[in-house]
Each structure stands twice: as structure tokens, then as C-alpha cells.
Image (cartoon, rainbow, N blue to C red; front, side, top):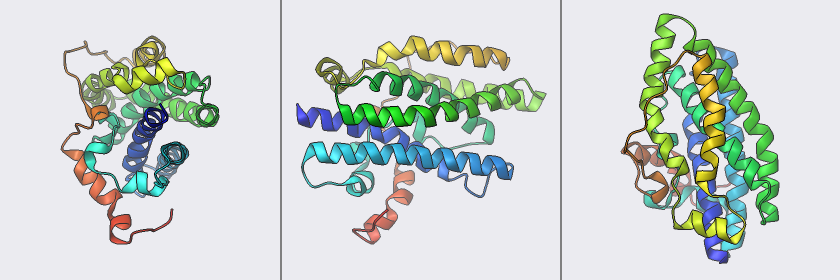
Length: 250
């Protein structure tokens, strides 16, 4: 049971870790200085959340793997992040749209995990709720501003939504690890988050005058270790220092 719990918490860490890496690519490349700093701060928050989860998972696992080894020294198939977060940033609008879709999910996940039977996980969730509320508010503001803005900004946001929306189905698809964690007490059934997520996201998209795409049979499989062609390139950059200089500290 401890092994299943450690793997569940490890998988919770992977999506904020990978999105934090992606958003860090905006450092020095934001459209304006304020947004350059805002996206960098979101990235730092996500990596901080991942660190807490990775450290907790490593302790539960009891195999001597600390946060560094878990973050940097796993094979691609061992990462179980959502495919959405590993996709390239694209333009600023696409990044904003991804942040909206993901942070809305994460907020409801953290709120549910704040009631976890695992006291350490509950504490991590409590800290992360405050940060994620800011991430969501930032993404909501920009989604409305760009979606209900110029013809060009509206078109870009609609294009981003059409491209990213299908990947959100993965948020709510449970696997055996999710089911075991929910039954044992520390976890939450992913399907229980879909209603609250839609109640958060849909009003924002409607205010932004964006058309919400229809659901399709497409299912991404990042949480099963089956990644897009972009993941290997991301890991090559993220893992380079630890693999080149083993034992390097954060």
C-alpha cells in the first residue's frame, strides 16, 4: 500500500514539474516585462509544488531517491504528467489558455486533496491552493482580455482552445493507481473534479466570447507514460545538468 501511495504522489508531482519547466522557457521572452515575470513566478510556484510532492514520495518509497533523483533521473516512460503540459508553449495566447485549463483543474484537485487522509499531502495541498488561485486568476484575466479583444487576439485564443481542449479529457480519466488511492483515502477520483472544473472554465470562455469545442473520442495518454514527441526534447534539456554532473543540488 505504501508503494502505491508513493507512486500516486509521484504522479501528482509530474504535471506541475513539467509545466514549470515549460513555463520557464518564457523567462526573457515574455511579451512585456510584467508578464515575463508573472509567468516565471508561476513556473517557480509549480516547481516548488513538485518539489514538496517529490520529496514526500521519495520518503514514502524508502529507496533512497530524493527529489533530485526523482525529478531528473527517470526515463521518459516513468513520467506520468498530462500530455497537455508537455506541449510546446506556442504564442502567449496559447500559453494563457493552457494555464487556464490546467490551473482550474489543479485548484479543484488541491481543494480535494486538502482533505486527504495523508496529512503531509493535505498540508502540501493547503499551501498550493493559495498559489493556484493566483495562477487561475491571472489566466482568467488574460483569457477574457484576449478572447474578447481584437479580431487577431480572438482568433489566436480560439485556435489555442480548439487545439488544447481535447487534451483535457485526460484530467478526468482514472487509472488503477487513481482508483487505489481514492479507495485507500489519500487520493481523489478524477471524475469527481470534472463538474467543478467545467463550472469554473466555461463561464470564463463564454465571457471571452470563445466557442467551446465538442468532446471527441481522442484521449491523450501521458499519465500512462505514453508521451508526445515533445517530451523527449523537454527532458533532454531539463535533465542535462544532473546527468552531466551527477549529484548536483537544486
